Image 1 (cartoon, helix red, strand yellow):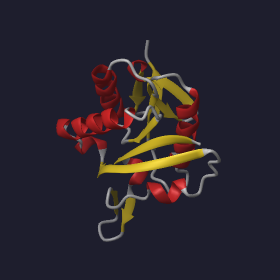
Image 2 (cartoon, helix red, strand yellow):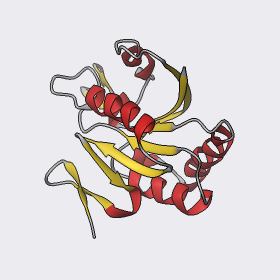
Image 3 (cartoon, one colour):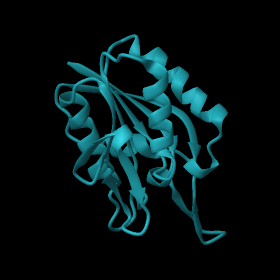
Image 4 (tube, helix red, strand yellow):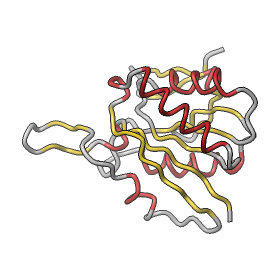
Amino acid sequence: MQTICVLATGGTIEKVYHEQSGSVANIDSKIERYFKLLRLPDVKVEITHLMNKDSLEMSEADRQVVLEVVRHKLQCAAPIVITHGTDTMVETGLLLQKSLGELKAPIILTGAMTPLGFEGSDGLQNMTESLLAARLLPPGVYLVMHNQVFPIDRVRKDKAGARFVEVT
């Protein structure tokens, strides 16, 4: 059985509707609930909750926490999937790529443009695709969203198009 380490940092994928304010916010983690909906034969998913923040609120100290936990998890040589807010996931991915050197397993960053559980959410699709990518890709740092895989140093967010695009 293969193990995949999932690190949850928050972002839109984990946002919930807050009735009192009429807004969405990172209040409580819900990622585990959604992994239980998936059929994952021969895969053991280990979830570690690091934080529950919008990525625009992540500090350099928060990114260092992600880096240190990734370093620790890589000792097991298991693939890693990081759920992350889309606005700064490339920034976090570039830090990982720069700081970790030669990898023995893939590291996948993913998230959602619409929160899990909302109509039209892309979260479950992106999580599922990330788990498959983690099993198939060679070592490296990648962003997986909307049925696409991007090396982290060749991608940017197209806010107007609500998607990620390759840069050359």
